[in-house]
Image (cartoon, rainbow, N blue to C red; front, side, top):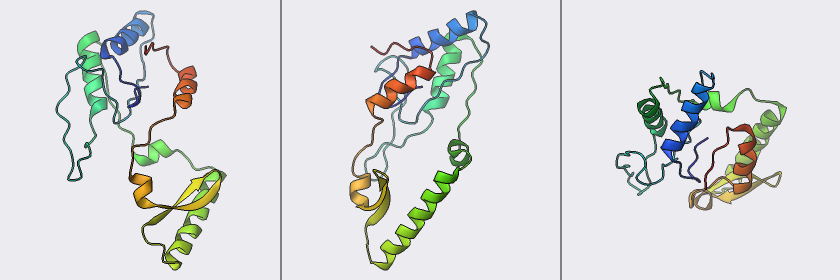
Length: 159
């Protein structure tokens, strides 16, 4: 898994794929989050455009990683970009109840005239937060979650 929080070395990724292939594993899955970036100078990257607000316009890193893996290993690489429905999976009871709670809280916020606010789940409770606070800074994956997610991955020495 390649995430924005940890720049990756494409040579190392390609070596992992090639090594698996040599050991008879004919397929591998590399999950690439939009915003993932290679260690500077390790992979050709186009200039990333910015929007009218100065934010980077993300997109296409998965295609670039696949192309580099194929170029470096000679192993055919395909890209699948997951849509919102595919990422979400089938809702379970918790999801349905949470959606209902959000809906009720949003209607109540509108009725209260709570402009510039949105509903959020914080510590299990539905709350209102200022939209500006919610989008005012980049949210990163917590280091502990990255560490735990490593249990499900081929070891990738990031340091």
